[in-house]
Length: 152
Image (cartoon, rainbow, N blue to C red):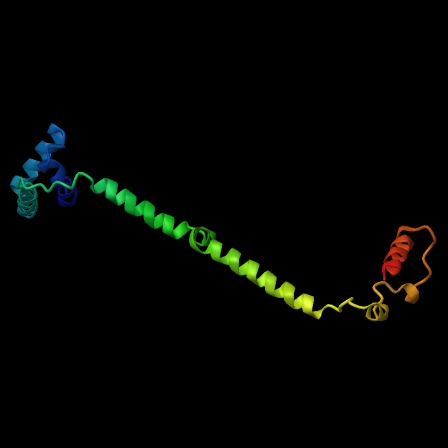
């Protein structure tokens, strides 16, 4: 066999994963090829270093902590803006909106013409139908205009 094929099977041979016929071919090649034998010895030394019996055991709750950390980071990334507003700023926005509505309402009220006297109210006509064609008698619009004008 070629050295490239043998070198691919050295790790499996060391771990005892080859069939007997394949294992025999690899061992017979190692007796005749110094390059492959040197490579096999390097693998044996590395395997001995890795299998020195010292095994670190992870903390029993390591997996739980990792899952919780991943879940928390995903929640931070996918949390919509309204969730933040809902928790802390929503009441403040409601109060600010109410105050703004009151201020705007007061400003609009100050800008409206007053109806304190009948002289002033005669100057302001809410509905002036003189600029359009005469309304048909008995229509809803004519009735409405008549009611509004009678209130002035």
